[in-house]
Image (cartoon, rainbow, N blue to C red):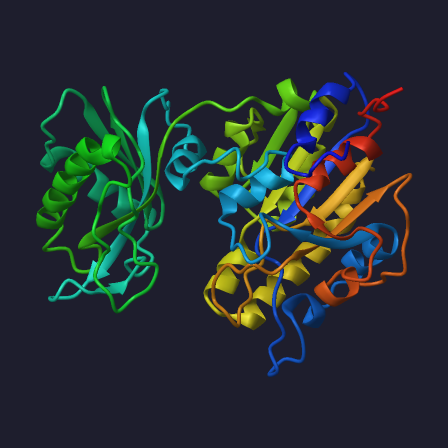
Length: 408
């Protein structure tokens, strides 16, 4: 009987070996793009990336569909797919990932949401979803102010914590909370915040608490020049996930600059390394304690940020920076090296998209194909073809010698 791809990860759990080779994942966030006629191609096609191109010529290449046809993934589902967790079965809100990213001690049953400090005009219309990207010190001051000024009438409490720049975290803790709430972030400017509402009957009391929180925050921040409102998204109730070690026998390590990606790593049981200050530091950090782990997850954020800004040339420059660190990463001689992304962020769209992302897998027994460049068009001709991103973990495990034979 055929195994559908939705269920195949449970077979890897059954076949896992206790030992094997070391896997390195280099995830270049949002690196996939679309052609811009002003520059003559996608960001990957325009960038000068000789080291990535050479890797492609030594690897099996293809395209990954992160969740499913036409589905634009958030960073959480994208990374869970890459780690072998089916994104439609293992669902998690951005709030939980934000909490774990800053090391907040979430308890089962807590409801968490991501906070964006934002700017609204006199009519309550959002003019800047990021409040001019306020600095983290301002964020910390505003979180203290809200903590002191807002009072919620229930048998529990709330926490608001700074994350980075304009991003913060809201956690509600108490009995009977449910996180099925609609986001208030309209995801665009020129509109008022969306109405907060419960998505099921059990979440109505929690919606009432959050509505009270928002009214008090608006009053508290009314005299702020830029950060005079908050937008909430990614509500979720925290439930622990099984770890990578429990599922696939992998001791994992995360090397990432941004808290959210450290959060999804902690969610699946990885240890989180002190973040490198610059991209050029990644090879050095990778070498430190390299032999203590089976899976190393390296995350590069600025490609996604520049794509969301709609800044094509800046995204190209980041790709070229990443290319420059490839020789240093190869110094550890990983048994399996994967380079891909968690989703596409075309600068021409200035946001995440549903388009498949290029992938290369370099290993001793990886089939070399005719691909000689790491970009969307070239990788589409590779031997891996177009496949669900969930398949990647199984391929990495197999190439690392970490799966037994299936069946007699």
